[in-house]
Image: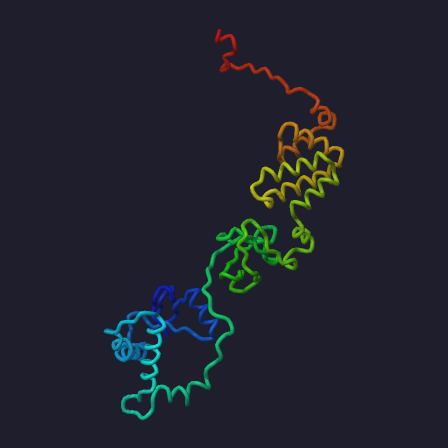
Length: 306
């Protein structure tokens, strides 16, 4: 039984109250149920309110005028007062709370979980085409089964773990890593055709560029140099490799040399150069930059300033 405080209940209702994530996780961890009381109905928890009143009288009130110099001493005194309270007989009965616990309640209790309860934080994210979601707090990417690509999922995370849910079903769990702009990948989450993604690294693309030629290798190096983080250049480098497969080593080498000469460190620029006719491509690097004469009524020309 719980009050309708915001840390526990999102929306109070006489018939269908909405419990928040943290309280629901707490109940699940300890294998119990949470029953919010009706708003402004103290009779729903009369036994609890009465127990609190008795504890204030028998435990907190005797501590009022005492001075404690450390927490251990205070806790020891509280334990002694609580034990005395449990040993005291109920009013009008010959049994105490301790006796009732031993005879009726102890055997029905479930064992405590092996791990301590830890509060979770939650956020929403969309699964990227590479089967990963990003945890914004750490800027770290975690893999999700490829079937959920493009779906909106919920990420629940603690200091140690990251769990990913889709429609209240857990679809992935990872150990939390706080290294920014990195990827934590479970290979089984990737599509069979895309599992080579987990091998992507700066060294991988350098090796691929070396197999094509020195100009392509230098272009890939420049792509990584202009990126703040290597992962930002992975897709661009993959595009360069695909252009080499499509156009051939000789043509991509010549186009890469033009990009390097004019500082066109871009996949789009490389693709544009490769789209030129073969004669234009192999000769454009030897030409001087074109001088274009522009005639327009808004252009004054050099004679205006004489």
